[in-house]
Structures are given as structure tokens and as C-alpha cells.
Amino acid sequence: ANFGYSKTQSFIPNKDIPKFIFKNFDLHSINSSFGPRLSVQKSTFEQFGLKISKVTQAFFEISTDDWIYVIKVLSKKDFNKDGVEDVAICYIDKAKKATYSTQEPILLTQYSNSSKLIALKFAIFDKSCPQYP
Image (cartoon, rainbow, N blue to C red; front, side):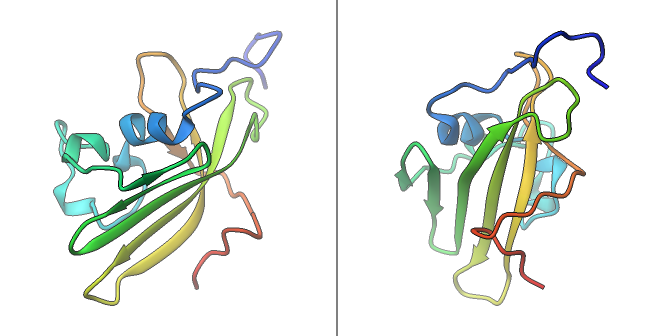
């Protein structure tokens, strides 16, 4: 269903997508190591005061003393055919001094210019982002 839109709506920019994700991805919408620290005031990488250590048009990496977070942009299109453009990412969340490590492909979407990017419960598969068992 495309909810009456004749063409795909998009609220995701065509360039600097990694920086856009850094500022707008609502971490409440996924299970991650951020879980217990999330709040109304702190729900994005930027709001946690994290700094990007490496960034390109295709990914960003945040490296702290204890954690490494990587977001790789895989592709951008209307994956679930709802009339709104989505962005597929590979999310890596890894502890440097412990065994916690997760990597998974996630589909993000944004429904308006004033809303945050949220993860959708929509399975995506990408060989470049194999999910850990």
C-alpha cells in the first residue's frame, strides 16, 4: 500500500547519509548496548555526546575507550513498498574490553522532516553484513 502517494516520499538526504544517521537515528528503535542509557533527551549517537572518528559517504565509525560503533550504508530505496524511501544499514556494536559484539542489517525509515529515523521490523539480507548467530 502506498497510502495514496503517486511517487515515493523521501525524508533522507542523497548525500552525507552517515552524518544524517548519526544525528537522527533513534536508538530506542533497536536492541543495542545503549538500552539502559536511553532516555527522552538521549536517543541518538549525537545526543550521547559521541564523536565520529571516521566518516565517508558510505559509513561512520565511533571509537571510544570501551566501544566501537559502525554504521555502513548499504542502499537506499523503498524496500517495504509503503511509498516512503528507506535506508538499509549494517549496524556494528562491539565492546573493546568485553565479549559483547553484534552486527546486523537494519532497515531505517523517516516518515517526516520533523521525525527521527527509526528501525523497521522488516528483514533485509545483505552478504556484506552477515548477522552474527
